[in-house]
Image (cartoon, each protein chain N blue to C red):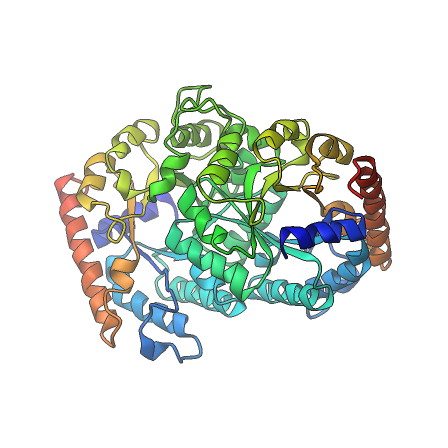
Length: 279
Length: 279
């Protein structure tokens, strides 16, 4: 899915919502847990309920790896289900991988070819070698961590570098766009909603890139602030919500409640898209 | 496996070698590739051949994830094989994971409980939240990336921070040991052999921690230099070699050649351990 197709989806659905399928086996409804593939069944129900309001699904590998190879089967099956049933929805694998080039070639192949998702999150700590193997896939999206939503992002990401006076996350944004080949067509950046005001400053460096924004909901970020400081003429935002939607109920009515929560977010997003003249 | 047990193994085997099972399906011998579990069969042959010279095996998840769930099965089966057959050998999963705390709880459980390895590599870009869930496992090893072996480690890791004048990797070492609870008993750090002289400086900050050293062999690092600048009275080094051992031959004699290469490294290590009065 390219930039234009992504924007078309946002326009059509009047939404920039990503639903995070952090499908923790200990948090899904009790009655599903005895199924053969409980996570897959849970995901399919959530996907069918939320697809009309959603432009992307994000699957975090941690919640699948914790189930061993059985988890990996349910991860791949969920991806296949989305691809076949809702081919217009962007599929993000939230894996935050990063390694030497030789190894990242394997990760890029694992996710972009074998698993066949549209987008992968990557960690820039190891520099260019670790990100380039993903960026080489021009028809896929490499989503680079910049400023994450967690409190301890301050341990490193918001410190200043002597060499250029830049904040660490700002340095990553600059390197990625100026030297690593991260264009608005092949890449996005992760910026936590908990740093909404910083988005204004980030937009000076990456005015056109899509940003993947976690941290709304459970982590405390505000959708209105994210839009105020980060929205572009092509929206440029994909806002993730995981636990606030998928675990809104853990009774039999969980798909219905997830749908309501997703629709609620879509309605807020529609107002924002109208307010900023995007739709 | 605790600090003492690890040192006992080093003492007994007169070696601080880790063999990296980066078992790339496209590089293993052709005649194995039609097997049902080619990577597992390859790994078992390599393990049986090299175990007498080896104190650790390191499995990089990338080379398994590229095979989908089938890869995950062979990864787990390899780990089970090592655990049962060579229980005294340290098993490292080289996954370089890092995420928000809620997610890293799942990764820690996935690797330390479900997969049941001894050690996991983690990426510190997201700070304390992302490392603590691993460090909580007191009887396991959390191996934190500090200064990696690849060229582009210079993109971030070797820059200076204005706030404290420290290099980024040095800041990570300091934070981890002073604030995150990374002790010599529950943690190690990754330092690439390609930065051997820097080890002297690193030893000022972490005099007692074990360091996991990749980058010998294909990547160009020198074993003698690593020992010169990094060795401690309890050795404090685990030196990894992957491609130089496991792919030394891709004919039928591959286990024999791998054994010779591993033994060759063990002999060099024995001389080093004697030279520094450790054995």
